[in-house]
Image (cartoon, rainbow, N blue to C red; front, side, top):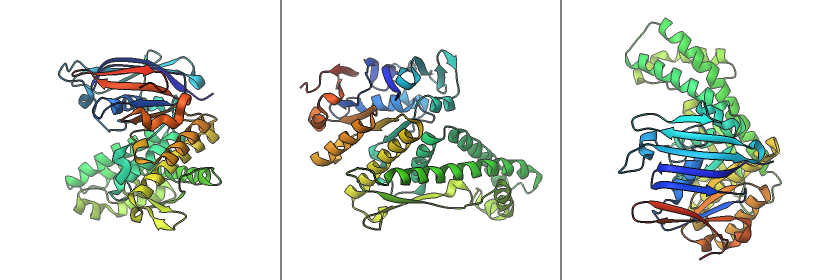
Length: 368
């Protein structure tokens, strides 16, 4: 059975002083004026997976002002992981703490309880801005398939930071580098394999899918060194160039995700704004389909302000695909009219600013 959030409780989380919402597994349509706190709700949900959430915010940035008391997110998972409880907290000046079923746990453990994918407005320029955003996008997809991907990414980044420090300090003794480069090499091969596997799964999920959204051809552009030994040797050989630059110039942190609009044989970067958005939605839906095929359960799908950029036909098609998947999708929009095609297939949450604090409440389908 597909896992879903049965309850979500927030305390001093951004604009929400206090909120408790109960859900039954249907998609969740969140509506309210701009600035009311809609995105804050789905940001809280995104933090139930490893990483810094859909806004990539530090724990200190999330604390509600002016109280600055620290924040808490609590969630109960039903369905596939019946009865599990997650609690996230952060006190002022401290990093985020994670507890699962009352026990302290690493963030990476969250990926084994919930698979979460998302699309937010800041990703609309994904195909025309820097490669770092596309790598993060691909890594979120890889993480959804392979929870251990987060651990490999953390290990690689930690070793690379230490190597970069040596490079900046102009340390020339090879003995200082060898262990770090081997750690980087071991993790690099895992990262690249996971990314390529994720791309293969997305491409397979697009084939023959009944969808109103365009298919994309995806490739991974970057160094492809098949073994840790190959990668370690390449790092050793490149130390001179890296020292001159003061940073590591080769490796999976330099890779890029390349997308082509398949029907038009056109690079995504050259497509219209609407086509680029449609490609992103297509990839998120393909990710969800592939996860369901792989695990038997659809992921949570977070779609911030997605309905506002689609015409009525595309909105209806998106909602139909989500409901067919059986996913608990969390969607935001300024008004309930953006979700009219969902009807009683969804739960509705109205969010309002009540004079300095957000208020969120479940309301009946079709309520004004």
